Image (tube, rainbow, N blue to C red; front, top):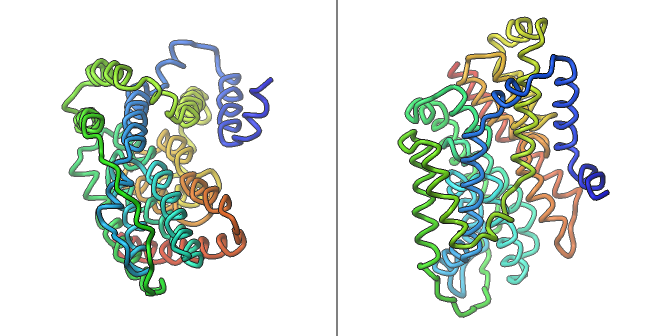
Length: 368
């Protein structure tokens, strides 16, 4: 069976599936309760966003933007900053994992061609941090943000007031860290820039705007699905193959498992009492072990304190390499290079993450 090898390759999905099955076995079976626990609008919005961004990536839009910025000569520091802050700003709209999927391989390819191999570890490390912290700003920046925004029915203004100061401090810290990059002249290969097919890009950008209108609660969910899904099918039905169905399944299993927890009598009160006032610390620490998406769904059941939970799971994306699963994407891309230095990467990654984490912890406790 192909299912068993797939589950072995994806232990996070396997654990959440077993979690859902185990919890469901402890409560009376109720199909209605199971269906009610699944946040269908959130899953549908994620499905639409992933399909659209896959199309934008396939269109060459992001490579085209890089080629517009750089000609034949630049400096290694300027090049590093471009790739790092491409992740920082793009992740605010296309999510942290997609940002890394696009810009990390591009950075590896360009730096390798430019014979700037020594830049790979610091640039990919800070690309990862930039994507994780930049994505914190908006509700659609990462899955846990979208869940918290929807679950607690936050307004966009309230959401940004929580996230903006941390993202601003992170951005300044990341920029200062780029001064550690060498500042030598780099010669780039000059390829002829292929024309961008705006006829394919424009409809996808229009569909992306519809998703934003749904996030802002202007466009109802059913209209989003009616308008977006058929148009994508007409434009390029193969984009549906690019969707991260593992993430959608992971969310579904978490919803079922956490929904089951809420139906177990002795788990309906005491976890909330233990969590009260400690949402930030508990969510940050659990994120280091479980990663921030499962931590978000699990803890939300027991607290109404959205602000410390939002800060905890996002700042908690710094630290271990599994604290944010997006970090694994860039790690896998790096170890796929010709001469990877895995221990060097993990040391650099951990040191950089802990440095920014300490700064943000200092900020949080001064403000709070």
